[in-house]
Length: 360
Image 1 (tube, helix red, strand yellow):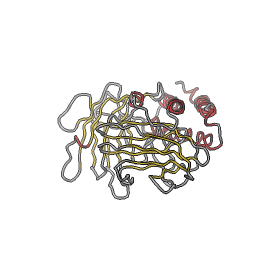
Image 2 (image 1 turned 120 degrees about the vertical axis):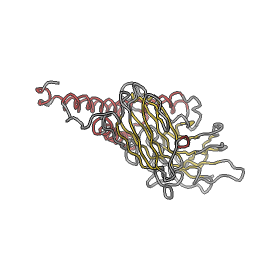
Image 3 (image 1 turned 30 degrees about the horizontal axis):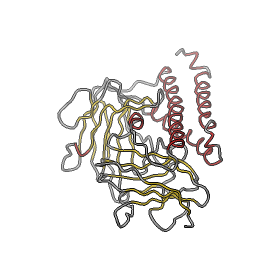
Image 4 (image 1 turned 180 degrees about the vertical axis):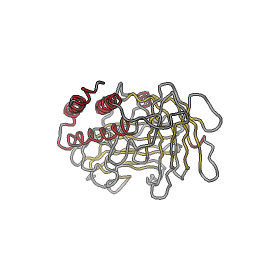
């Protein structure tokens, strides 16, 4: 990029125009053309922008990687798990890396390398996986993982030529009592010092930022519309191909659906619980953001759920507690997406669902 272009307003104006165009994804969603969903849609774009700036600009140098949170309480992507801590770092298939950490007591801790193409085609292919159950951990809880293309002895996380990201997932049963893992990452064979930000790198980063915002929003609006057409008040997405292409955890079986209630209605969900390492259910809005779990009971897992006398599970999605089953609060919404996860399950039951009257 020429100095004249950088010193002119064009770079910033082009960035703002691309960001403005992403707003059409929100305004074009006819099923979300109501005050609450439209408001949350615009907020969703600001949240994606925050994530993208961290991902594509502030933490984008694979020679000097650092972990950042790509989904959390106020920035959410693709049915983010309320029981998870997500941590991402930029990597390159041309380098090797060392992850150091302490295990903590969180029940599930996993590491994956991904080829992140959300800004291009909405995919995030898995290029390597390792789980804490397969890792050597020292008696004091410390561990080390080598991330590289060539296999090495000990804890090894594979890289591919097009790997661009490491994702760490920590899954809790009870956040109040469990201790999260702590992790750091460094390039083993990188340069000693980072170079100053160049005009070309800035312009490329801003293009990736808006590409990520638009690509991510477009991807999950399409998912929502598909669930609305095919899974209305149902949880039966048996084909997992789409979810794994988008970066889903290969140990999880994802049952997505669309929920929609009229005044006075509730959605009753009944299922057998398979033998598994973890399960949870959550409610999301139209944009596939988990509803605000800081203040509402919008999800439940195997630790907090009450099972029926026969060991089955009943969930009640409703605006108020009906007094039976496990109440999931709609938090002021009347529609959105939902997700039931079976992690490490021996089989994958499909729940029975039906609309009931709250007064009954």
